[in-house]
Image 1 (tube, rainbow, N blue to C red):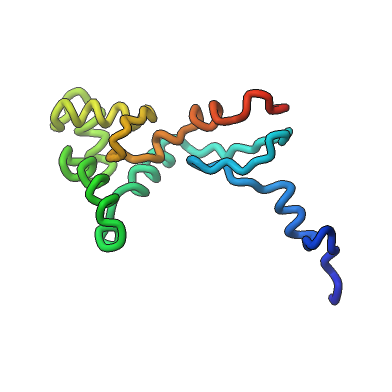
Image 2: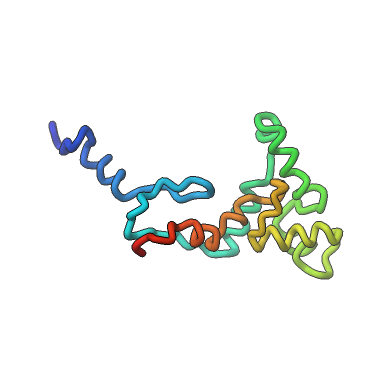
Length: 143
């Protein structure tokens, strides 16, 4: 009913709760309080996460129209090696017997291991792995 939300310092109770409990810790965004005592990580199935990362950074027609520079950089990983689908990436890039050139196999292994080659062509989401987040937690956190 009327006045159901409690006002505290110009925040409704729901937005105050959100402010105190929900923060973003994703890729290069970290807006958590430095004295936060609890950090919750969502752990995903590693294969599902790898597939999601592979598809997330794969440019499509929309990307070529709206972010052509980004799309062209990313397209090299998917088309030059060629890693059109995740199955191609696994069979041709990660297997020693795969058909991809040696440079693509090195690129594939570094990508899946989360090693940032700083060329911004491989899928970024593999770089932002659990090791990345562990190292990003402030060393003096009360965890």
